[in-house]
Length: 317
Image (cartoon, rainbow, N blue to C red; front, top):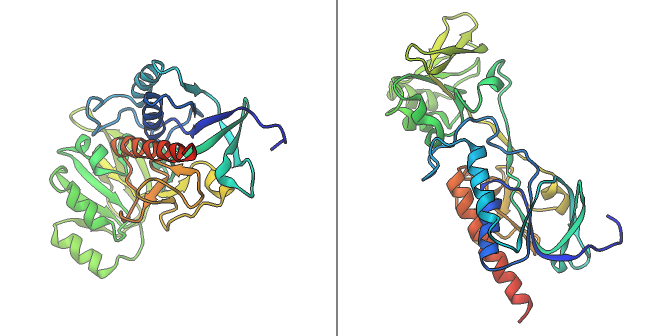
């Protein structure tokens, strides 16, 4: 960072997914001077439709963002800048709560408070063919995408401790459930839970996944297994590993939880005063895992906006 200090805004929101956009709306409606940085890349890029979002069920993510941008345009104190941030730091390392500077493709910006909403990156299992299916035939959330697999055979990739719960969620939706252990050992308790629910466990390694078409015209997949017959599927549930989509938590030295997400309290505050986090990248201690959904991210963005506004109000008392 150079020594020149740019004009100080009230809040910089880094990230323009559902959490960042909802935060910007809340702040705009209280006439806060807020800048939203939109890198143009989003976690839900692979999918062709969002689900489980009232008013936007089955709508393309780009259409949702376009409507959000139109909404924000009505608020004069909100700036949406289509630029990527690269580095964040306190204006004064000795007093981080005094403000922050953000380096972007278009120059430096500064604000009294920083709200991170950059989301996470999904690291998929290294199964050949999975990348091409993720977001359509393959998904990680039964609530967001399970309904689209209704009435068809569904596989769960991996027989980890999560698999019985996923099977329970999908049991009312799928015509048949199978767990692809992919050559890994299956914990006896996990196997017993799956078999008690009538779920087939296939132990063979998964050689590759292929895109197919179901008899009713819907997209499907074929799991080719080494040493056994293939599985014809209408859907595949996977459990990606989560990583921060941006380097800012590391740059600021923020505390992370075991999930890999930024540790926040009930008011979206991180371990560094003046920095808040909302959406998929954030994780409160009250939940066993981060909540990954558009609606939850929007709610978190609103909460973070109210929290940062209260923090700014306290500065002028």
